[in-house]
Image (cartoon, rainbow, N blue to C red; front, side, top):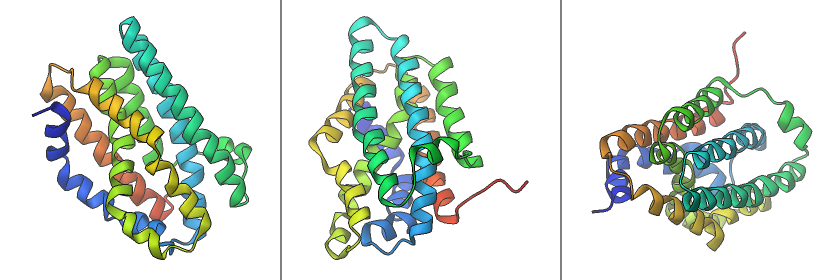
Length: 215
């Protein structure tokens, strides 16, 4: 069994909660209140900037060929999701300037700090284990909740969901999985993968509750 197959099994309980989270179900069905989506979009834009930076740190620790591949993936991530977010933010009356000025929520800040710390202190495979749950779980969410899109009449949410069905996004996930399958220390990457998966769940929870600093 490949490492990523074992990780998928080990994280199944966490991911089961992710794909069935109320925020996820409501955005795929089209019933999510727009104010919650706006909150999510502003927070997620900042998170995507953070994860792209983490990818460049991970790349700097790699051999030449792996470094090149990770940087290409980071470029694609910036090209696919960050550029899409510029259009997405505009469609709900927000701007990049507003996103950049948005203070990360406590959960978002903790998550970004975690993947940044792993990128700095871990090896290449540990770094990938920290960022893969984000990419991979979004693909799983799309796969498991695709049927909900049939009754979704919200064009903004439909456009948002489209990204995770594209061949280009699928290739990003598969390349990361292939790299992680080369890891030698399963226990190390498992611990990080599961922690990052928990943060993914917490990110949806944060977005649904529109979490803010209390002081």
